[in-house]
Amino acid sequence: MDSGLSKLVPVLTNPGRVPLLKVDPARPCGGRMKGYGLLHLLEYAETTYGPGALTAWSDALPLPLRGFATTKAQLTSIGWLPVELYFSALEHLVTTQHQGDPRSAIVMGHAMATRAISSFFRAAMGFVTPPTLFSLAGRFWRSSFDFGTLEVTKNTPPTAEVEVRDWPLMAQSAYYELGGTFIAWMEASKAKEVRFTRFELTRAPALVVAVEWT
Image (cartoon, rainbow, N blue to C red; front, top):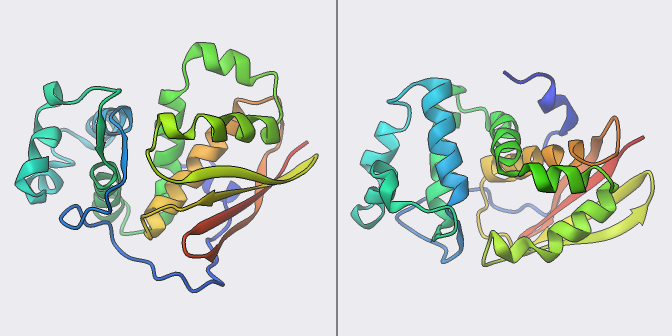
């Protein structure tokens, strides 16, 4: 299932000594994301791991959130949901299906992003390089999240650096999910042989990603 994806994302380094925590839906950070991520993840979990893969996760959710996990009718792709819903479900799959290895979130993030890229955007992305792609993604970041920013900090083709700022979830699985998402985006660009050379928490809460391509 990995297909070599994890080799493209190095081990997360943490020179800023950012405290890493589990995602806790009972202690929401206040950040929200659009519902399409959870919709895709519920479908992915059912088809990949089986219908009961997220039952224990949904049963453990606080009552106000449980309906979103058990009744898809309450979910819409454009509705805003607590960010912990999606990332706690992902973390549950990491724990129960992948022996707790947070790097397995790379594959899931890649799969979710691949599902989210429409044929129209995939065609448009095929004409741009990673720095342009990240620049455009940074402009539309708030259409998916109501927090944080995505900034291109260095642009020296065929290398670039981007930084995710003000990210509220200090969970390894969440950072690796972003890594998988970025790989899916870059694969849709005209760049080839894309790989990360830096994947680092420099300070709370900033994630720096350096990328090379041909």
